Structure formats: structure tokens, C-alpha cells
View 1 (cartoon, rainbow, N blue to C red):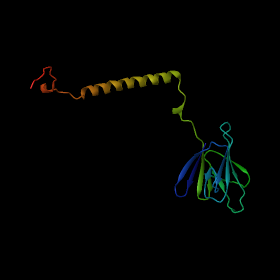
View 2: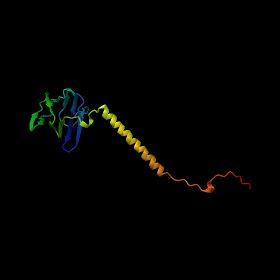
View 3: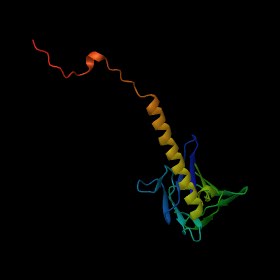
View 4: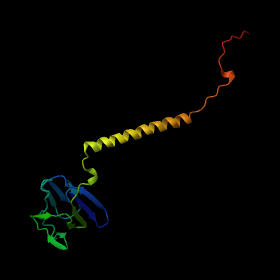
Length: 161
């Protein structure tokens, strides 16, 4: 489960919902700090149920109404009550839009059978062997040739002066 937070200037941030309670609002200790007038809680029941609700704290400093936009309808978020969130819901709070998204498991990350893993490892070994053969061949043909002149050869004769 994810929340996508977007402000009016185009800044956006994706937040993965992993905790059971996420605080959202203007206080510095909140999980998600937003410079808004109200304080909210996002309550996650866990991966078994995957229910998510939003709770709006009562605030005397704000008389604003906040809505969830779902399938073309607007649903009021009343103070001191939990309101259920569904995938695709959008919430407008101050200058921010919060979108609730359900995450899915990508098929490419499904577990593989032992036979598939073994075949994959075998293919890696073939590529590694071919790489070593290629490196050896390149090294052999690019090896500098050492030329020794006759005058550089050591002699076994002693010269007397």
C-alpha cells in the first residue's frame, strides 16, 4: 500500500504504508510532515486485511471541510471519525493532494523452481568461462614482444685489462 503526496507546485513523494498508525500533519514529530492546519492519522490494519482508514482530529483553528474523491463522488471526512480509504481515492488537504494506491506484486519477482535456478546458474558459468578464454586470448596476442640484442646477453668470458 502506498500514498502519493503531491503539492500544487508539482513536488511529489511516494510513501509506503508499513506502520499500523501514520501521523500526518503540521507537528514536527509526525511521520509525514505537511504544513497544513489539521492533524490526521492513517490507520493500517496490516497485510492480512489490508484495510486502511483515515482519522481526522478535531481542530478549533480550522473550519475547513476535507473530502475524499472516489469515482466522481466527494465523501466528507468528519472530525473524530474513521473513514475508509480505497485504492484510487484522492484526498485534498490544504495545498496537497494525497492519492491512495494499492501495490501489486510484479510477476518477474515470483519464486523460481529449483530447476530454473540451476539452469540459470549453469548459464552464468558458461559465460564466465567464455570471458576468461577471451581475456586469455587478448592478453596473449597483445603481449609485448621482448627483443634482446646480442650485446645485452651475459657472457661467460672474463676480460682482463
